[in-house]
Length: 370
Image 1: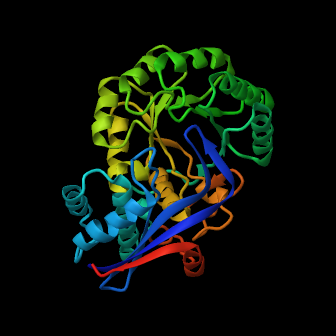
Image 2: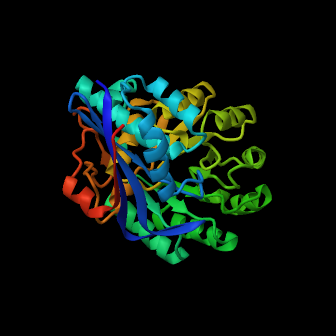
C-alpha cells in the first residue's frame, strides 16, 4: 500500500457556546482535515487542530506546511513505515507537531483499515472496555460554574474539570463554589492553563483551596518554566499535572529529571500524533507517572484517535476528549453516552466521515498530488 494523493480541508467547527480559557475565547474551532489516498483505494483521515498559543502554529500555517512541504514529501510512502515517515517529516520541518499529527493520524487510520483491525490493536490492544467522560467547564462567574457543575453531576458525568486562570481571587471563589455545589466526594480537577504564571502566585491560590480535595492542578505556571512547576509540586500535596509545558521527548526528559510533575497531559497536537504519543506514555510509565490524553477541542476524528490511545494504555487514567460534545455540527459521530464511551472493533478509527458535513464546513480545499 502506497500513498498516492491527498486532499486538505480547512474547516471551522461551530461551538454550541463559547469556550473560554485563561488565554482565549473561542466561538468556533478552526481545524484542518487531511484525506490520504492510496494505490489500493483505501482512504485514511487525519486532523490538525492548531493553537498558536501552545505550539505556535496557525490555521493558514498548517495548510501551507502540509500542502507545500509535508504531503509532497511522503509520495509513495507505505503508511506502515511510520517511524520512517516521522523521521522524514522531522528532517524536513522543525517543530510543527500539529502538522505532523495530521499525517500520523491518517497513517494509523490507513494501517487499521488495511489490517482490518481497530487502531487500538496497533497500539497494544484494548486495555479498557470503556472510558469515563468528564465535563469541562469554561471560565465563568463562580455561581454560574457552580450551577453548571451541579447540573453535570446530575446528568451523570464522572468528573468535572474547571478552567480557571484569569483572576486569582475569583479563581479561589470559583473552585470553592463548585466544591460546595457538588459535595465533598465528586471528583474535581482544576486547570489554570498557565494563568497563575509564577510559582508564588500559583502557591498562593493552591494554599487557599487545599481543603477542597482537588484531584490535581494542571499547568499552574507558564509553560516553559519547568523549574517553577517543580517548585509548586514540592510545596503542595495536591498532585500536579503538566500540559502546555510538555510537547515531546525533550520536555519529557526534563520533567522526569526535575521531578516536576506527578501526571502528564499529552495531546496529539502537541507531540505529533499517536506514534510520538505512545513514546511519551512509555516514558511516563517508566518514571512512575500517570497520563491523561488531552484535546485542543478537536472533531470526532482526532478525538477518536486520542480515544484509541487511551483505550490501549494502562497508564492513561483519564482523558478530556470531549470536543465532539461541544460542537453543534461535526464531521463524524462518536458513541458518547452521558458518562462513558466505548469504542467499536471496526477497522481504523471506526468512524465514518460525513462528506456532506465536511464540505459544508470547508472554507479552504487543496488537492495535493503527492
